[in-house]
Image 1 (tube, rainbow, N blue to C red):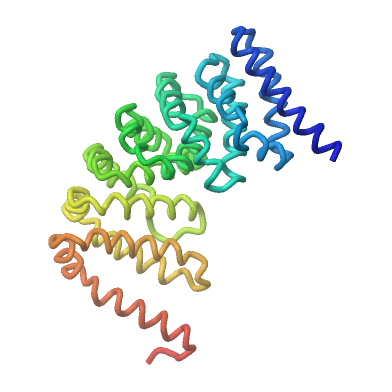
Image 2 (image 1 turned 180 degrees about the vertical axis):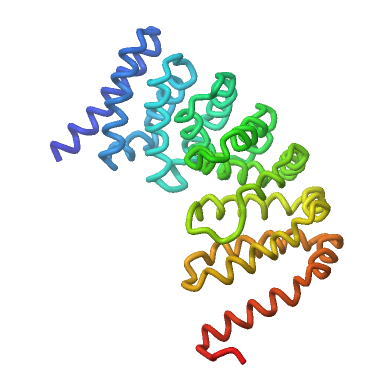
Length: 308
């Protein structure tokens, strides 16, 4: 009990210190030191994470206020790391707390500010995108906020310019997926080449980067729900490409370790065939036969019956 009280009083004390630093606009060294201490506690103590997001706690407000006002990069990174800890370990309720306290807007503003650096700070972009990808689905107005803040093109351009940097691209793709839940955003992203971009990431069977391909496929399936984007995909011959990729993954994935990728390809095909043009392209590309044959082979394997 005494250690619990000590830990809780420590975090309360540190947050009070941080609030005081904010009020006095003290030197960045102090904020850097205090936020690093809070981060250490947040990383090592579930009790601390619980305390900071409990009802009546002002922890989140203090962190967000500091994030909004600090000019110090390390303090910013410390706070973002704390927020990652809070939203990663606490499920939906902690994410909702962050949204309720205005976290979406503050993080989108931070994203816009960070994008003005040339080149943008990689760790900063990874952290911001990771948190936004988690909190976006909990914020009903997130799609509109992201569009108004110019976030769509910031994220899209980051992916375009860093295709080989998978650590950065992954959270960007996760956030593009969230943006795409909004139909206006989906069309806007489509006009700026997002569909073509996804096909630079999605490709034939590979043992590498399967998590990246999975997220790209999820994003693509969401984007193709827009009829405009679906038509774009058909016009560029991507129905045939999807079928070819599907067959390749089907052929090589003997141990069924990449079922989610194959499911993702099918989801994209399902999205694109929601339009008449897509259905025609699917039939013209022999899609019915391809899916029938692959499902038959899979069924025979499952039943351990040798194919005739």
